[in-house]
Length: 160
Image 1 (cartoon, rainbow, N blue to C red):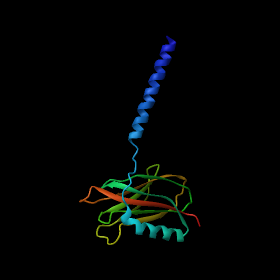
Image 2: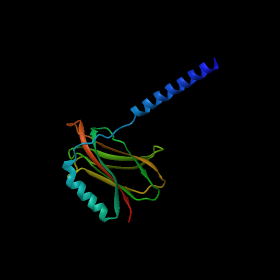
Image 3: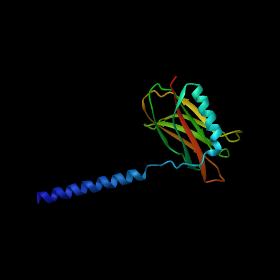
Image 4: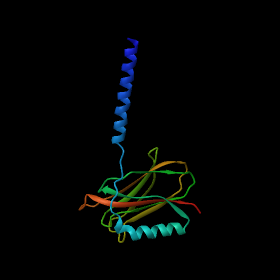
């Protein structure tokens, strides 16, 4: 009888862990790439600019974004490192905004592109974290005519 209870407890524990794993996996947001070829010239110019100023590209990616919804990007950053985050959004999207939070949920940085701005939709900021931690960067863009928008982000770190 004790052996049966042990097997039952083990089976219940296994099912609980499996259920929790499934729930956690459902909450993961995967970035879906988009065609950022229209941004290629801007991307290349930005990479050259930051390389000339002593920055190394750590991460870059395109992301298909839903209009009006934040796209979360998690990035590890070291204390006293100097980082630059660049976001290129759809030129017709207004407003565009980036918010950055530490893992405690406190907002560390925010920048936006006001309505009526002319030129490319490029937002950027530099940041020097006080603590080594993961930071959540959330770009958002809004376009009333298009539901899906392409965004491109780059994270640099000063190395020189």
